[in-house]
Amino acid sequence: MTEVSSRAIRKWNRAAPFMSSNERSEEIRYGAYKRDVFRKATGSTLLVAVGTGADLKYFPAGIELTGIDFAPRMLHFARERTSECASPVKLIEADVTHLEFEDASFDTVATSCTFCSVPDPLAGLREVHRVLKPDGRLLMFEHVRPGIAWLGLMMDLMNPLARWVGPEVNRRTVDTVRVAGFRITREFNVFLDMVKLLEAEKG
Amino acid sequence: MAPVREHAIAIRVFDYVCAGTFGGAAAVAAWCVVPSALSIVPAMLLGMMVGIVAVLPLLLLLASILGGFELIVLSMQVGMFAGMTGAMSGFADWLGVARDGVIIGLLIQVLLHAVDWWMGGEVQHD
Picture 1 (spheres, chains in turn purple, red):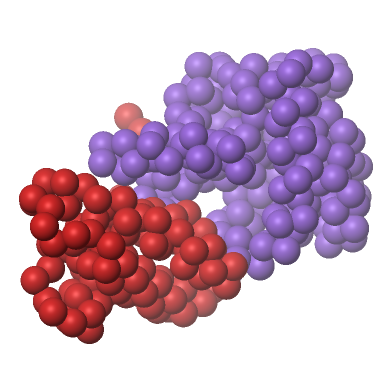
Picture 2: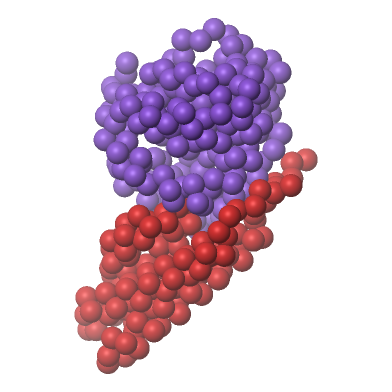
């Protein structure tokens, strides 16, 4: 495990109780959008950065869901929420940049505010590309650096503080998804062009 | 079809209340802290900084009720502009400064909603 990863794990372990107590806000603001994108999961599904398990309830019945997270304390909270999912859930401690699954293992990979916190997002998305089946689908709910110049600059200025306590707020995740080898089939702006739903296939 | 958010009106009302609160607090804080002897540019810059610092505790408090990226973006912008307004204000009492701050906050929220309405929804790819 790299030093960057172990620092990130410590940070997210510390954040887990706060995130667990703050889920209601996320659900009220973004629950409908998450449900809209995650209901499209089919077959064997990998949820990257399951966190405290708050998003498990948005997945449909009839899938096999595997949730991973690199922070053990997040998984501790998530284990208490597996019954909220309509499908069986398996939770594994793992880092998205070093997945131990075989190539083309999953029909769907889902992420929810994940690539703002992965230390090396391109490496993570390349691993997602590797474990996704050729006809598989990537479903994402992510926040990204806004394209509006003024807001983008503001996020750049805020990022050192944001990164210290939690996620990075100026990631260019849409571009990174493309660089990792995906073709974006749907992009939906939830708030400005900052909070987005993305659907992608292997390009 | 676009997903429909439950409680959409309540969320909007909450955001407007937050905008006014951020604006009033930032303007009054800058009016209290920035010395009137400062010339325009340093007063504006100091006012912006004081405004941002003043909205941070309010952001934490209000985000614990109904947080989200909307509040983060709103608070920083309102903090800057209302702080600048408060620092430049010629009012002798804090009530006038607070009223101006609230108006600035609400105007920024209207602008954000307009931009959000314009940008929101499906993005067309060629």
